[in-house]
Image 1 (spheres, rainbow, N blue to C red):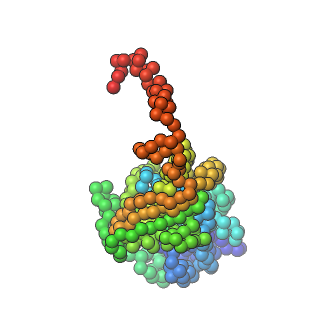
Image 2: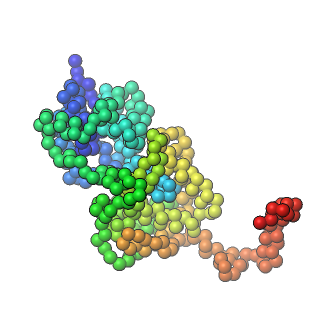
Image 3: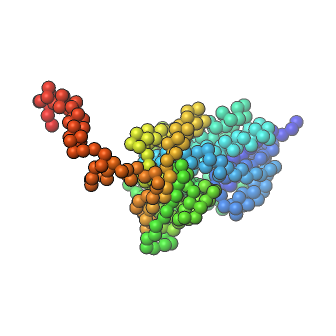
Length: 399
């Protein structure tokens, strides 16, 4: 009988390394697939390939979905200024969805009998992977050895060593997930809610002093230039902003939030590009959108981010939200100016032909040109009518 095909979502870490070797030894044809959303260097991908074959994989592939991730979701997160709890840019959690989609697509292409991943039973990623596979690869078995067997790190390392594979899988104080939209940090001091992360927990440190201006230019809400240099490749623009901001260690924070499985979770992160881009974009929108455009866009942007985090990217309402977010960006054009310094930044101003503060009807706090003093008095009197009616009858409730 032909061996069963299994696609392993392979990151190169301990859990997925164990999974590749164990399933190979159990008689499967293992196809190791690394779905890259911008978090792997070329050197890491090369090492993953080498290790996958050492572990027994029949085939290894890298599935680069970085640009697909930008086009199908990341740009909408920018349009919506998405920050979970007004803090976390939904970094790796949103990328997991696109990694899962890429793995499911590959499994369908090769006619796989099963898909395996290394998630435990205590986190969100198991839901993001399983739900995506159930929808996009129906009927394909889902194998999760680490979760189902409640395996310890020692058990996995011992198994690999016993079968001739040695690598540095020492238990680290912190665990990291790196992607184009930021790095998440777990473990260490974060397990104590009274502590923050020390300097050594972060991967990027201050290498520049003083201050500098960062100018990000948008057209219809998308980045088209950084400090005057034009970018057709939006991913490259994000990477450039990350390079600039990371030199000042900008974008560090800790987030406490509600997990999909119902418990509270605490995660540290460093995300210079997301923080700078979102605040620059928000600054530009303040001057180019109407009051109600901003209000309703904030509402749907919040829902978009929540659905991404909660593994609901495939919910049919998401394209509808994306359509509204896209429409809202038609006049979000111009350059936002930020001032960077070690560990922080401030917004300076904008330069835009669509700036609504340039109205000829008046300058706030200075002079009106579109109405007379008497018209202002009449407007104010009419505006106060419902309050005068209420308190005229309920005098005992006057504040």
